Length: 289
View: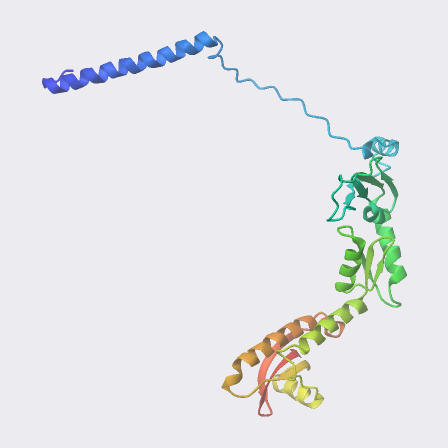
């Protein structure tokens, strides 16, 4: 407004008028809101902690045995377990859905104490201790362990009994106790599994027909590369056109050597892959360096 330029004075007047109009609009909005609710401008920044909801209690926790266990935590341990839903309705069933039923059998097998099922069957509780479970595992392992061996055992609780049993033997288990769902594993069982895997690898496309069974050749190859012993040896094809086939054989022998490192005969030894020439031929071998 202090400038001598007329146009600038006019612009300044418009700015002042716009500011006053905006202030009137804001004050008018505030006045209307206060008329609607006089407490709208009151802000209370104090917060009260809401009461904590009580922990939900399922049907199992209402059983008197569980209540007694809760009252004596130093003497009793328990774990609540949801039971699986038993599916009995076929795919072509068109009537009303059957009443839902539950199956606690797998959980029951893994409980080595008092097993209590809720009235509705949807959950259960196992009153036991870790010491009791460990003792049962030791008992089952000893019962199924081959003479002269030390076995390990684990409880399967994450699948149906058939799945647990199948997984047990797929992983080299020696025995599976169906009453407790415990899988027992012995060193001889693990070794047999590894030997089967090695046999499969030796017969695959990469090594089929290439394995050398001549002990003299195997000993000579070990001596030429400075190894103590040759565990498995395969002859490589001669000529540049066989590069892909030879690479496949070397890759397969690497898997064989990895499996062989876990067998009892290679326990504590270092097994490595070696590709070298011996007696005017090229070989790939799994050797003890």
